[in-house]
Image (cartoon, rainbow, N blue to C red; front, side):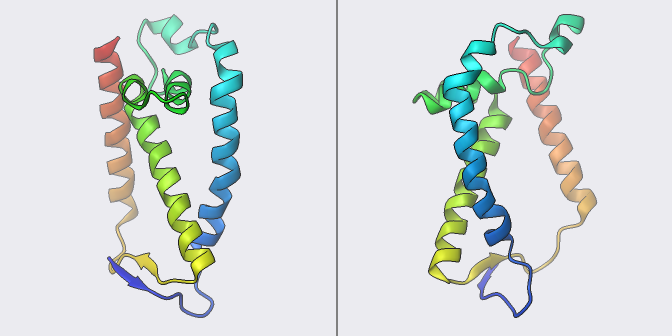
Length: 136
């Protein structure tokens, strides 16, 4: 990984994706704190059919816990969703700094193959799902 300035005409993911996450995180926070606690009573259909949690079970509860100041409990409820939210928040902060400050951007020196990224993401989802099943 290296820090470098954008080349002329180069795609700017920090400006496009990073700054678009700001309203998404704000809306998600509002939903998790104010609206989701009202609908938790509706159970997961996958859970109802199989008696096993789905791979996103506990996400709403985890976000509510996270935003009400209980990060450990949130992480234990749904580790992958909380980690993804934390990564999105960190990326948004990084994007704000580099876009507004006009500073060099962090870039990979070599491209990671798509199949490897998909494999890693799939393994993370399966590991999280195994944890949720074990915890149930």
